[in-house]
Length: 180
Ligand SMILES: C[S@@+](CC[C@H](N)C(=O)[O-])C[C@H]1O[C@@H](n2cnc3c(N)ncnc32)[C@H](O)[C@@H]1O
Image (cartoon, rainbow, N blue to C red; front, side, top):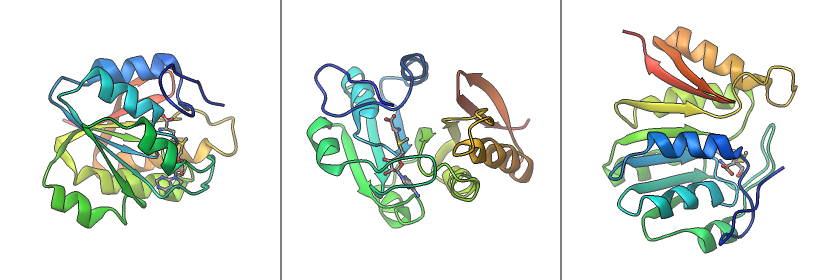
């Protein structure tokens, strides 16, 4: 299920309160990394709202556990001048992310929802976060849904292994921060 938003093609796969929650965390000059973008509607909305912030999306545009494939053509139609796309998984995007030279203020994880993929994304994300970044994971707590339950396991395991904790939950978005 995805929401149509006026002025964009395709849909946003996150709830409107989650779009607003993320928007409230972004600041005008932030750099934001999104992993799993679908049609790019969600991120293009944020990018339009914050024209001086920079948004990078990473997506291999293929079917994954708990998700259909994104659409690169729609992503490019939706994108604004302050957006960049890297086609691939977060692991495959490594060199391009290093070459960009920017660390990210916020990292939004919403790619493949299997436990293994999400755990790998959480661990990989840490290196791209400015001051550990603000890692936000979508679909946390949906343990009653077999295709999404891996996200909660992955987040909890990641926190245990990496010394992080869930500092806040907004609907199904978990915000992760390093334990102090
Ligand atoms: C639920 S959608 C993302 C929704 C998007 N964040 C939004 O707000 O509308 C999941 C996306 O993950 C992508 N995907 C599949 N496997 C992936 C992987 N291993 N790494 C990153 N993204 C992946 C799919 O192509 C799809 O576009």
